[in-house]
Length: 530
Image (cartoon, rainbow, N blue to C red; front, side, top):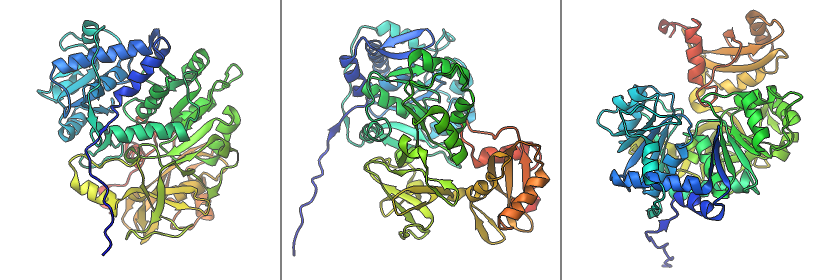
């Protein structure tokens, strides 16, 4: 019998993510690193603040094995907290700053934080977490009832703290998935995993990124925008934070011109607002990469953004669990984007990623057939924290199951046709909301649409469409048009006209927010409709 050599199982140290900042600060000490309003810090300034806060964390006995939960809106020291946590070898858990105290408590039960860092608006959240120590992070002087991050930094400025050693597989970031239902799920992102993501982003999304570039942060650093910032830290590109907590398209364009912003990460709804705000005084020429992700986009919106901003828009498809690194549709491909049954492609697989389409039993499907999108590669996360059931469901034969439905064509381009969990069954037929949305958006007076399945006594479930329209289109007229332009069982039963589609805190139009809007408008069926 032939014996084959086995791969040695050796415990290996790996790069601490904090080293990205340390190395950049050594190369570019006097160059601008971060801008927020009137505050301008160099790379040396930012690195020194991280050292100072790391000393404070160390004095609080926070290090390897500990978790720092960061519940705050974007602020000038947000990244200081993130990198100081890594510098001492602990794990960061950023959260959506719009969560309620009860929702934050549910997340804390999963990750069991050693320390909570909150902004000055979140005292109720600190109280909700009981005996967990809480520090205040703020651009202003916060309430003196709790230790201030700024004060601790000032106390230790000038002292150095070496990056802690970390091992391959050590967690760096517990990333809560935005679509969690039931028990919250924390995706474990390790130091080596995120170093690959940074490298992959540079290779596939922003080739040639350098200290000559500047990034405008339009979204909360707690999720995808925070991952993107790691890429800019690694390359020494300036980071410009919006001065307020809410998005202002005019202010964004002002900052783009002032700081010669060349890269941005956003979602389709914000991209559309940026495009709408372009006027004769707007200069988009500094832009090199306007990256959008997180939600479907229509071909019309893609085309308009391409025409207004030029060949700089770039799409990627990814999840928290694959950390934004499944496919990319580069700028040059936006001139003539391929479609599948009206759905624009999400692009080709990212470097190091393999995609297959599988049926419900896990069998590979041939080119052109729709099924679940499954992926493998170094961008796939380590699994969900302390959640064996979720891990068993998410992985099959080693492949990560995205829960999204899609098709691969003969060129390897991926088309996302919907989400398995959003599908509804009407009269025994499976209906993909995305397919219905693509047909409704073809109406000349429809600007945007979201479709959800709602309970129905006769059919089990039926489609409810939330629609933004112009030209005086009525609900009854659109319902009639739908029945003429698609199979009757796919046509929505209800059309609800609105001025703007609702979105999550991250600018996504999701099934839950559409359902909540219909309920608040009194259009959702009573429970007895089942």
